[in-house]
Image (tube, rainbow, N blue to C red; front, side, top):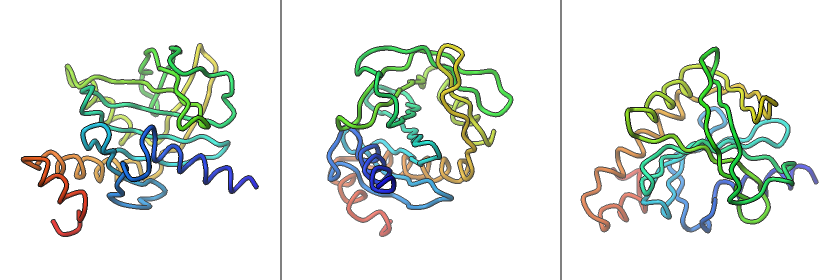
Length: 188
C-alpha cells in the first residue's frame, strides 16, 4: 500500500498543476532524477526525484515568471495551505542558506508542497542552481525546524540534462518548431 501511495504522489508531483499530457518526458532515471518539460509554463524544463520519508523534490525553470522554482513536497504536511506563505531556508552543503518566503500549494489536491522562487535577476537563479548541482546535499528548514536533509546524488548530471533541455526548447523559433521538439526530442 505504501508503494502505491508513493507512486500516486510522484505522478501527481511530476504532472504538477497540469494534466499528464501537459508534461513531456525529456530524460529518465539520471541517478534517480527525471527530466521533463512542463508545457503549461512556456515549455519550461524541470527535474524531479523522490526521497525517503515521502519527500519529493522538483526544481524547475519557470519561463512565465522568469525564475527557478525549488519545490519540496511531503504527503505528511497536512496543515500546509495553498496560497499561504512560509519562511523557508535552503542550505546546500556547507554554504550559507538561501532564505525566502515559499508559497504553499497542494498539487492535484493530494500533495502538499512549498514553492521557493529564485529570480533570474542578478544571476541569483544561476548561483542557486550551481550550488544545487555542486554541493551534494541540501537541508531544508522552516522557522529553524529541519524539514528535510537530502543527499543529492546525480544532481549535477540531472541539472546538466535540464539545462540541455531548456536550451533546446529555447532554440525553437516558433511554436510549430517547439511542438516538433516536444513530439520527438530524440530526432534533434
